[in-house]
Image (tube, rainbow, N blue to C red; front, top):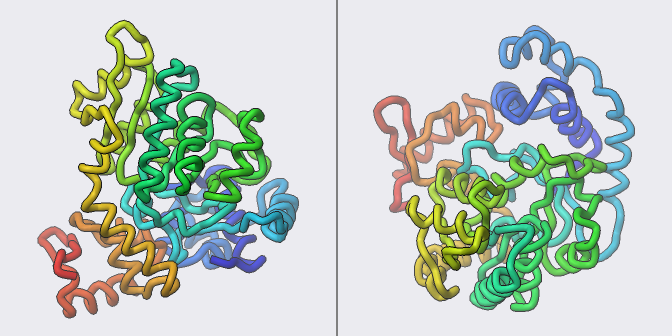
Length: 372
């Protein structure tokens, strides 16, 4: 997952140009195969993919680009005990769990152990203003899950998030913090020491460029990464209108398990969890309830992580199978997930089909075969 200056320059131009968001960036990657090719090609060629205005905008580096590139290179070169990397959509180590989601981030800044992107994980989220019992519950559940081998994912916010990270570290396992700022910022400031511990013993990730301030608009998109990385999401306490319920909804839409901890019928902080339970979330009373549901998945994903650690990145076939998931998918969706050219993907899918690993379905759909 190392990246040279020329490649980083192209990624930052692609993502930093006004008018080119994640969707347009993925379209360009699908059409041209790499950010360098997307930047170098003609305006006319780009316009066919993302429209004339955005295509022209990409012709020149955006304002402040040189400074952003320099600061990112300097950040990557710092040595403080926690490894710094960028993980792009085309990397072999890009987490398959995110590839299965509708809106995978194009680039992630990472500080810590990037192997945790592929660890079996559970998200724990909830109120920024929890009750004392809610905080204790989050800490206890996270500690128990951590001891059982699950990585705890949360958002480093005050309240339930912070308690979840602390509990995971106390359990002797690992935790991933997905932040809504540049990875060089700590928000809230009172979690500075906690963030340092997570970087040393776990992983902090962000899709936002260095220097990004904690804008309110950053946090709902951040929640999709928390949900996407995790096999399941546990909501400990939440009001009816809260970001935690957004995370739970995104998890459910991605086909992941959603758990909720019940509380007093008189507590406003329990109403969000009760609403989730009414909508089909699984009521849990102990961490063992979650482990019983997730035990089969934990075995498979733990083996995958172990294999990745001991044997290094998977082959192209492995990466494509991971991108396929197990649901029927179109070629266009695979192009968006992988960033590979359609012709290359078509040839590789044919090889996997002939090998019995992929089935071609009506409607130009492809599906991974369970036997593989």
